[in-house]
Picture 1: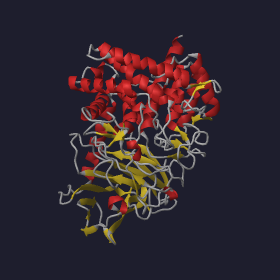
Picture 2: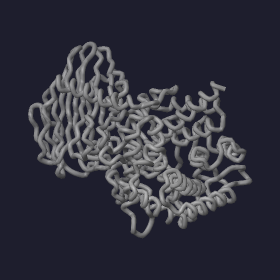
Picture 3: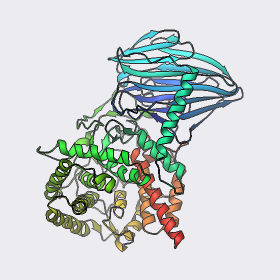
Length: 606
């Protein structure tokens, strides 16, 4: 067992309310329950000694490890191959299909041998409340109960368990054709233990969960060139969505570094208005209308909650239940992934001013008749009041899309998305004959456009730039043609794309911006942003640079991990960095794939 395996050496399993990471060595080293944003129970990925983990793997040090997903599902299979035999561990969490928030969540870890004989070792070492709480252990022959802070962790297995202090261990030797398993269930203290696992019950659960995911995926209408990549991204977005509310979290983890040993270690287990809003178009394009609609309803509820109150109608991010309270603190007792400290929980960026979120929010609501027709009149009133306010409030410096901590600026991307907010609001009102002060919105929209064209352009770089007092390039502007602010073949835009090629692109990988040229208030550097690389592909395809777009897209696939997942960034040696897997990366992959497919098809027809 590696002390800190590479971030990319993991698969994701979940039940649509929380999720766990399983390393390619068979170790669950991240799991928080009962919700994505709950305190962790297994967090060895952030502190090997204090974080806790659950390991199920062979003892043979010569075993080769491989991972894959059972096709079209979120069932993760970890294979161990050695001279003595070949064994498999299959991990999954049964989804709660009632979509009701529950405190009971189950991680199923089945094991079987397909060749020879394999001895497996089970270790279960939970550490509740981010490793800050002691627990008590009650041990039976095939079951163990861990208790701490009003939470019970039930471990049940098909083989005998042994005490190891306040933790448990077990060994089992299986021959070809034999199987077993262990089930870890979290629930409120005093909750009834689940039925003990049997081979038949484990087999039935695998089949049921497999049918759930395959049935869901059959809704997809994607028929393009990269079905496995796109569908894995769709499943990942589904896994990162909190089913009771429809809120999409930014990533399953917290504290994983953008630079190993650095301080850019954030908690991403919350719902960013920006990420969730842009996911709406991606999910609609694939045919997942229900998921897209659920998020828009969640978003409109946030607007309605703020009606009649002073201040901003929206904040940058929320908890998955819509709570705006995300106080940021550090876990000083955690050493961090490979010494990357501080490890933070909560997120102070929730209190930042980021004007672009209004554009992304209205953009989401405007995505097609599938959603817009469902908006209630009260929801429409909340939206129009927010836009009436925004028509007078858009012209302010802010912290920008990248949540910089170096002071507010007049960010060009924030202005572009301000234009989008007003433009899409006008389109909604006109398309669906809804009451609105369209003339007021039009005046503000046109003022935003003129300001960006006059002040967001650099004669030195012949490009649109990060903010008005700078000549620095910024990859967020790659969205300008997608949202219709500029035509994709406008000379000004093509010149901007050329400038980005020179300043931000490294072997098809794209940096957000240059922190040295535009200080962001944080020490250290960062890798290329995978989100930005896929936005680059999208922009290239729209600009008609198809050969370059396809090559960049194909090359980017080589940076995916072994099961098709992406973290936030790619490091200098091609390693994945940042929280994992990241929703923004996967939704931008879907966007790029669809745009590139359409452009290639059109080129073929011509």
